[in-house]
Length: 323
Image (cartoon, rainbow, N blue to C red):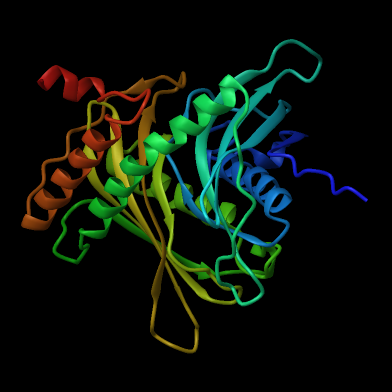
């Protein structure tokens, strides 16, 4: 009997429910990221035929909001494979369920790694692009590998201490059984939802207005987060542009019987303030005071410049104006 070749693409479809609407009045970025992670997981598991874990979520721009009642489509397509990794391009679209074309709301690259029963990476079937579009998407993924490595290296060089004076908040809670994924750990999408919530509180406190995420990048998963562990999600302002507030978010967890907390996830999220009509508005510029403030401020600028070199990207307008 001939085995059916694995498909490299999965599409999830569902209606955005009223319970998906968050503080922004539309579906929050964290919920969209949760959907993205689920679709990418389905594509990864279908390809690898084994359990897979989220390793990295690349730059995701939230172009337009998803509203309650929208028909949502999340397409996840494997565009490149390493030895045990799968690079998955995800596209989120939504529209009126009564008909009409769907609008692309966001897209990003997600990397999953196939693991065996011992939790260690295992080889996956190699994806061979055939069509011109598949080759273009493969090349796009390859071009971003170097950019991603530079981003991770820049992030790993930084140290965050109490010497920083910027706006900072920490959310603390227990990882509940309802947060579980198919491997018995906390779902990566749930972690990204927590990140969005902490970034929202930090940004809103800083500017005194409602805020919404427009970008999330460099979401690096270092280790699994276990059900029943204490979770700390720390969000800190590190940079402001004309409208954007750049928030560095660290997720740590540990056994409640111990005082040890380990870093599980780190990323940088950009939030913007909105007026009563939902339009983005300028925010007060943050001026770094301590040496740590200045270092992290420069770090955020460096990340902007690195991302500006990626295919299809460019520097933000406020930096182009300075050039």
